[in-house]
Length: 99
Picture 1 (tube, rainbow, N blue to C red):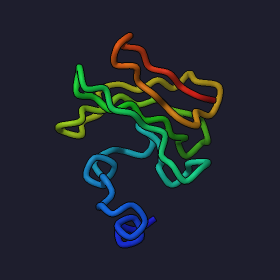
Picture 2 (cartoon, rainbow, N blue to C red):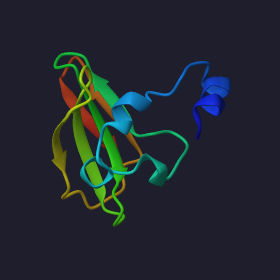
Picture 3 (cartoon, helix red, strand yellow):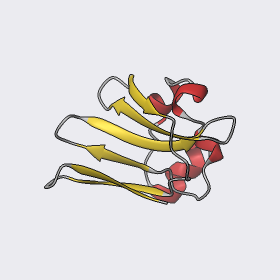
């Protein structure tokens, strides 16, 4: 999905700065998502983004990214199912993944 299409569909530019700064094999390839929505969520307490995408070998990766700098903080590669969506509960401070 290019920036012009994203601007027409959603009314704003895509968050390409963070995605372009990450290595596909480390954080996953956003072009390999199953649905039209990128599974990510923002956690305001620690200012991080959780993102779940498959890598080039089709293995799901859950990435923790600094929302300010775009730096990759951590990855979890031992996930066996594809994550369709992510949600962070700010009251319980828990991350939920829907498979």
